[in-house]
Amino acid sequence: MATISRGSLTDSTPRLATESSAAKVDSVAILHAWNRTRAEYPKDWCVQQLFEAQVERTPGAVAAVFQDQEFTYRELNQRANQLAHYLRQLGVGPEVPVGICVARSLQLAVAVLGVLKAGGAYVPLDAAYPDDRLAFMLADTCGPVLLTQKPLLGRLPQSKARRASRRGSPWSTVPWSTCSVGKSRIRN
Image (cartoon, one colour):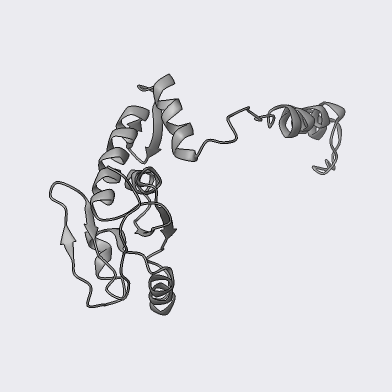
């Protein structure tokens, strides 16, 4: 900004497209030096394992912020673990898809981590998708469980699916009636 100000004092027709050598140096620093964020991590670990390692290192540090809410690593991990245990009770395990249709919130982070910790695979669903797209995705993934929030239930395609709610939880679970879940491969 100082370069532009100085240039406008000496030149009656300043050109914003012209960069000084100082501005070029700043651009190089921003684009290259500041973006060096490469970090070594175990290549054979899953996302949830990397997250849990971070929880061990910095349990009280802020992990996620949304609007005026925040979770520490410990809080996010505890909530994800609770959800993972609940999902396992519903038969979620390796290679079992779980639909997630949740508004942007801290609950979205809990949902994704909870599904991963249960061993499942999450299927992101956006309530803003057209009805036909949501119906296709629900039928195509054939998952046994859909995590959503009560306000979004009316937005999801109608089905004969049995609905159940978990007490004390923001989640509603909707088993998808067109699919069946075999025996879970998770050992408790």
